[in-house]
Image 1 (cartoon, rainbow, N blue to C red):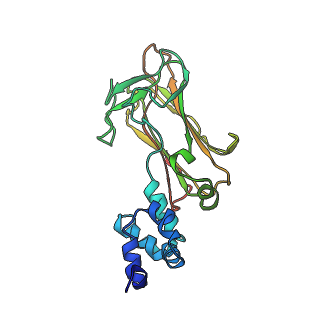
Image 2 (cartoon, one colour):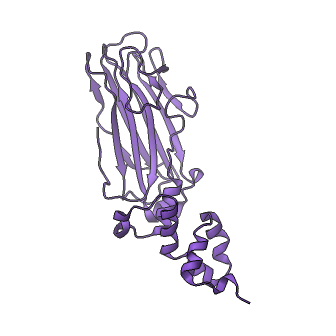
Image 3 (tube, helix red, strand yellow):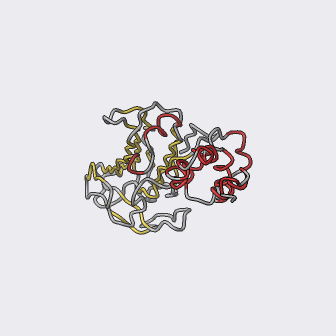
Length: 260
């Protein structure tokens, strides 16, 4: 009597590629040596990438491990919580809350401009004293296991949006750290502060940075941004920030590019 084990390998690959990755790795791979070998095939994970829209033909030659590529694509999402001020200050630690303190306003705000992303409706705004807020991301809690971070070193992409209001100058600062289990700084992105003069165009600008080939041992990512106005006016005339993001994904050919 024929069984599923008698199926040709290509048919078995097609069938198993329909199953969730968790089932493949935790159950199917343990059934027998034949299933283990099939689950380990690059063709199976490449097929899953094709099924779920992660496959790009131009990447064929640059992907060393299709299983890791699939898992990273599946995990990829914004690790910053409440990046658009839709939940007040939930998930943010207010490290400094100077002047009249942090505030949330609706776009475009007084003497401001709309953000290019029409899905963003709110932003955080600083005052005349230093205002900084941060988040600490625990990678294991987000599904990124230690061996993955140490051996594959997936790209960590940081993005943030900032803007001034037309009638007041302000200062913007960003600091992102990759931390070890003991909170030792393994790598840091800390660009020079951006100072925007009074009577600017009030346009929203994006800053981005990609961490790649960083040291082994990264267990946390610490993100902090903020600033203040440069004319010390009472109220909320300082830098505006929103739509922050940290994503982790497969290596690409565009690593180590910073844009401001």
